[in-house]
Length: 91
Image 1: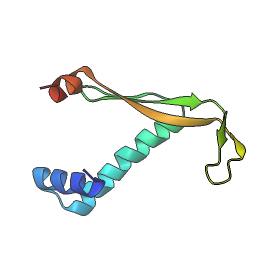
Image 2: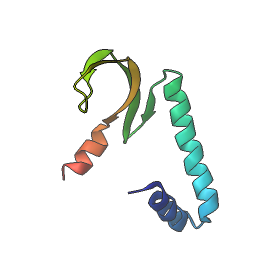
Image 3: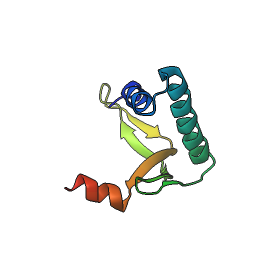
Image 4: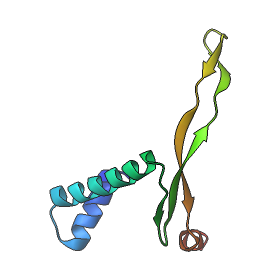
């Protein structure tokens, strides 16, 4: 499902135009991203939680040349589904 499909379904179910719903969806995503950038945990009860982890620096290999390269450490986002979501998906 794409963001556009989410916007279309929400707009249809709440009887609002797509532009307004798209602004709301963008605002929600922006707030989640902002909180993760600040190092906060984002928890949506019944759905799951988003957190960040630091992936350590490591050595890799360029597949084209075979040369060893240094891959720097970076922050990544990860999602943990909530209990209710797990139960709904396992049915």
